[in-house]
Image 1: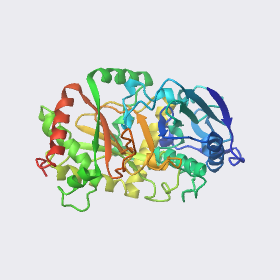
Image 2 (image 1 turned 180 degrees about the vertical axis):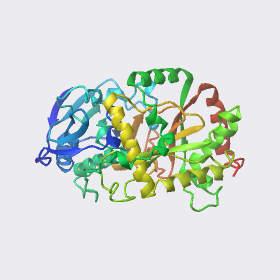
Image 3 (image 1 turned 90 degrees about the vertical axis):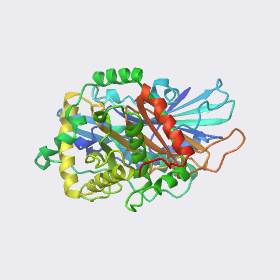
Length: 451
């Protein structure tokens, strides 16, 4: 393996310090992704594209700093980013199927990554890169694999995707996206907080140590299995026809279907069923005073719905999901929610704690990337011939993505751009029941689903 350091094509950060809000302090998590390309990548052109992208996005080559034990900044100091290149002569070809969310237990992603050492950010004042890129050439097949590791403190999935999309555009030497990243963000004041919202923030109020979260993960791995279910665009279209409420989206109804299937087929006791959702919602663009559309930061909130009027009705569940998302678009509500969460996350960072990953009773979490097309946005010109992969989920923690392109062994099939993969963990003794019901519904065109 060879390693090099890629600097911005021209200095742009000027050592400007971007003050981080409390809600930006996702310090230890990372966003790790892998992209698989069917043919040759020009490494020198990729390095040049990365250099240009860093100039346009100086935050990414900045340094995370803690000032006076309570102020958190990223100093845009135009540092170099590690770029690794290696040849793999052992694999005949990319060994994994089109599944997007790998089971983290299997350790499939790390060999293709140079992971950001985010756990060091609070422990050392020395420079630790916030982004790392690794390219692996599969010598036998001629495929190339690009692994990207992004410190979550830089921003959420929207931020990461747009950075990588800019890289893809520069590599192809095509027109760059309209989005011009902005980095200055609103800093929230404690007097804007609303303590009545605390019951909706158990994941922050009941924060735990990294060690405690690790113990929970290891325990869950013994009692739960991961499911990856795929819906074609045609199947989702059929599901959509089951609800005549035009305000509902295909996504609302797909999530409602999964909840309904769990409630009707998997839970044995009434007190176990899912009664509300926690939707992770992007709030950019609701109000420029809160977060403009081009803001690069962590701009999501975990929005809890009211209890479903009928937890055994597809349309009732879907309407509850939609109402909670609409409420998250209310600027006044948003300001109070974000200010409250901001204070909690500052306390967590100060005390070295993390978000509590416990499954809270009668709830389900939805973290959806359905609005983003990762495989297309970062295809480096390999249109509909780029596979996207990530890993990790948890008990009743739904991760949603657009489907990958499919190679059938001889050719690339026409891509289903409207389909979705949903990945989540479920108790082992529920897995077969859920899959049997889902496959029956697919086969019978959802005729038995209670509307």
